[in-house]
Image (cartoon, rainbow, N blue to C red):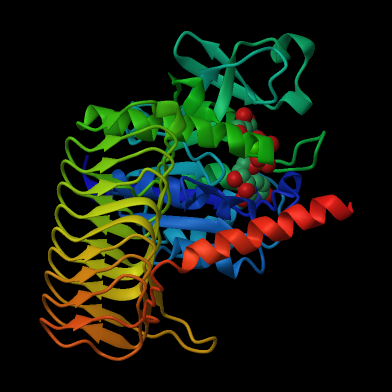
Length: 453
Ligand code: UD1
Ligand code: CA
């Protein structure tokens, strides 16, 4: 498709009152990505030369998500037809080609289906309008398609429909492709619904036919028409989106042992032969290289993991964790804003925050980088080939040089030079035979207490 021939209008002015939220509906997220972002990504995949988003007054936060694509403000929300009218000035000069109209609250449309719609329309004698329809159950609120074969005669909104029309089996998914040359004149002819007073985008079908042009029904999968009106809809759409992400990951060579228990984000990047065990949650900004194994109950966000890494079970990797190749992070280990170079290991019960850990260094069980003094964060730097003994506290800012060894139970608050051994703990005293007296005294005390009770 020639990219100079397509423009997209995304309608997102609705308040979404049924979400009962301070956040505009299209900013709620699927896979940690705003609904509007999903729709914009689909439009970008089609290589649209212009993408315009229609927002309501005061929706600067929606405009920020649309950026760099321009937004237009629909001042009074008087229906989908009115919203497209509001977008027209932003399409100034776009007179030849196709305009694709999408809804910001319908995030599961695939680029493939949208392509089909776009390629169904063109200049006369090609159809001027194509609309995506999906099979719907009788109680569904979608507008109904009045068709003769593939020819679409008109769309009737359920609120305005007769009982016979309400029984029609194909619903309007809400996406429309229309000949750009015809759009302004048809919009000018829209009349308010006598039932709701709104201007309906869907009326463009009948208007195109009245102007002597054809309209076409393109049928798609009901999943793609999933619209979000409530929190329950959002949860249902999240489940569908997760199914897609999991299927895509597996098709690309990732093993998911129990796919339905693994949560991915829209931007998750997984290499080949990554193995993800059950009950793993991956948040935004995660990139995992080939051959990494993530064991059960791990939680990751904002991290990169190099080839061959072994994570978990029960690991928590937080934003800014950068793990080199073959790094091991084991159970109950938390890593935040820290680099672990190739072959470094932190296998048990550890907190590594604001730190740099060198190649092949081993962090013993129970080690803590004390990075926060209550006011500021400080960095811990540990070199290559270092051995940090179990239960060490590293009081940052502090550094440990290459191949140094830190004794278990140390509180390290001063820098340790390379190849030094540092031990910072109370010295052990051993009194030979002293335990005999201890046992005698304690046993006697217990017997006396029993007698007097
Ligand atoms: C619309 C369709 C209906 C279709 C359904 C599919 C019309 C007249 N009806 O109905 O046939 O089955 O979607 O989901 O088009 N919006 C604006 N400005 C407005 C009104 C709406 O920007 O003044 C935006 C909303 O933010 C939303 C989209 O347009 O993203 C759809 O609006 P909505 O009110 O949900 O339309 P429906 O009544 O569901
Ligand atoms: Ca809707």
